Image 1 (cartoon, rainbow, N blue to C red):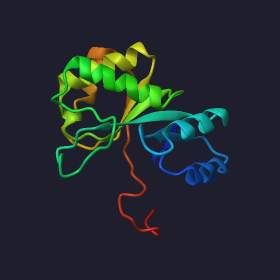
Image 2: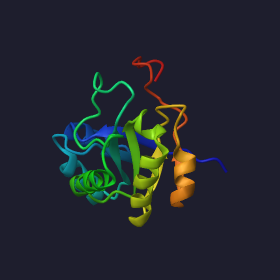
Image 3: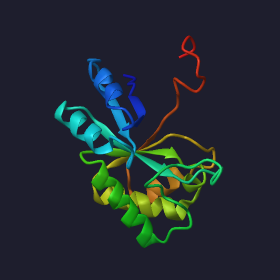
Length: 167
């Protein structure tokens, strides 16, 4: 049987939105950004409500520095130690997650070596990864194989076009 997972990204800016979404009695997964106004509060609220949460992990886009991924971002020029330290800070900020998905990351997701390092850390924490497919050059499959990490990919974005009728 086919299954559908609905993930709401960019959670953590607005608790009113979190509370509104909690009123929907469906299995919705919430991907929480680190280091925004209500990251921890959103994680706590969603956890208490028994909802599944992901760390919405900011990663370096090709367009950086024109487009900034936000606080807590992983960059390709970071050392392995810096990457692990930043990843741990992000998990401290957004507790209770069962997995991770990328926020931006078109440049980082194409760096197999850095991605493998991150995936090995996720494997140690018993987490999974969902590739938001921000680039065709994603090295998710190769890095996941090396790290023995369970991964999935997004294949439909409901709000690519900011038009309510199309959404």
